[in-house]
Image (cartoon, rainbow, N blue to C red; front, top):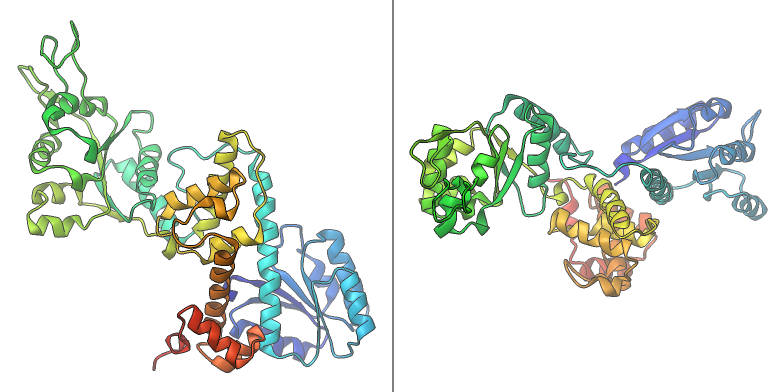
Length: 447
């Protein structure tokens, strides 16, 4: 996790500063160095996304004065003070003044990175709650807002704009709840048909016996049509707009053939009609299955598969784009609070621990349910057992397992360094590894 953490390092000893910067960068931090604390104050705002590591004894402005000026900018910005002349009274003074931590030189790299990691995690939580408070007054995301900051979602947003503008038919793949429908709405909203209908068809709910009239409509006088008027089917409602076929793999073989004909000819026959009606459609389909494999097995119409999959977009699961989890959770939480007319609660360390450590096998749907439970103020016991233990002990166990993984990743499976980083004796460390089913060897680089 340390690779995303930003540290501003302040030390008037330039040789030592250079060595410390190099060590922190090797450890995976984004580190920026300053030999003058006055220069280090430049660019520090309440939105600064990192933490501060400062020497105490510096000419002109010592670490305590530097710390006081940082607190005047943002009292929640963690400052870790470092000195070679530390004693108990100085440590007490620093902590009373609000310092996040006080370390005495020489300090091991493992001890230093552990302190910086804890401070950076606390900083991230502060900024997250500030962002949450700011979002309360903003409009809710609309359908077609593809939320996320991961490279995968950034690429999907770019692709959605191009596909929507060009009107190219596309197949959207990905696991259940990953956001396939959101991507389909994004393609529609970002394209030239944004002001036209978006017709969502849940293919697993279609009734084969009534498919023709429900999907293609019926002319006046036909038994399936209303009295004295014609029945407009779903495909006609999507004319000049977007037809979204959700869970397309659930279509039966006869329905696949009828749908293929309409898509290929861009026309349809309503029940009781004497001629075909033209269609202008942008067709999007989504599936959680391997549609290509189903086509090869003969259980899905190969021509329909190739017709739909000229362009294929894959939405990865949340476990592969963990940076999107806080973004989605905030949006879901605010949406739920507005729907129930409730105040938006702050994100607690336990909630953040679950966001960070849980794999979210149910993806966005599971995350939305968790956000709604938080909005309603349900305790962990009341939230149920979906996806694993959700009581306090379960949350802390997952958080502990996450810390162990982080330490092993940071040390590349070096047990001695990982134990030092976590300040654990050998027996306790190995007991915890066994409890969480972790093996240090799996974190070591292979030659």
